[in-house]
Amino acid sequence: MTVQSQVTCLQSQRVAGGGLLSVATSHGRTRVARLREEGAAKIRLPHSAHSGMEAVLINTAGGLTGGDRLSWQIEAAPGAELTVTTQACERAYRSAGGHAAVTSLIKVREGASLTWVPQETILYDRSALRRSLNVFVEPGGRALILEAIILGRQAHGETVELAEFRDRWRVHHGGRLVHAEEFALGPRVAAQMARPVFGNGARAFATILLIADDADQLLSPLRDALGPSGGASHWQAGQSGKLLARLVAEDGYRLRTRLIPALQLLNGQAPLPKLWSL
Image (cartoon, rainbow, N blue to C red; front, side, top):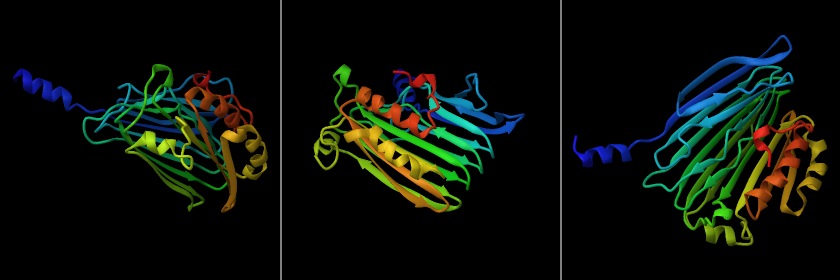
């Protein structure tokens, strides 16, 4: 093999990984039922002092670029309690061609509670990322879902002028579609975020979704917690409630300081994973 062909081979390498975690209750505690890891996708299970379980998702490749593929499948059986986060912020780097793709499938069975709070995704200049989130919640189940985006690291002087980000959500409750959205950002990200009707100069934003029977009771306190930097609304979704909140901030640090009290409120004042510490 020539040096040129070796270089070409190295340049064509792509991240591929998939992780599956299913948990169930046993003797009053949430325990692992199934666990599978493939490629760059790893799942770690820190010790928990309470009856629920915490899972940490890891992309050992350290980031994503064009052509990379990563998938997660998470399921909480009836009565199980699971909190899922990531080891660090996911990073979408500059793409030399094509887009990176991350797909997540979440299933929350009857009486189960699942909190999906990955740390923020950082988009870098000229990155291309497409993300897909599919959530299925059975009657009596509870799901708290967060996804957050940071446009470069302001402390490092990074700016994002051009990039492409697509985010697709499909959330079902009791077999019925209760939330669907298609978010598109780019290619001229800086110009788009500068528009008053879009980002008004913000460099970080997040979406929080709660599917729970008591969602309506949390609307007013959530609005108080968000203040002028965000907004929240509630709808009846089949036999349950849907609470949706959007937040924007000047940078990732300010976004996180606003996210933490909102998430703690919606999570029944339960503490967030230690990896979320400021």
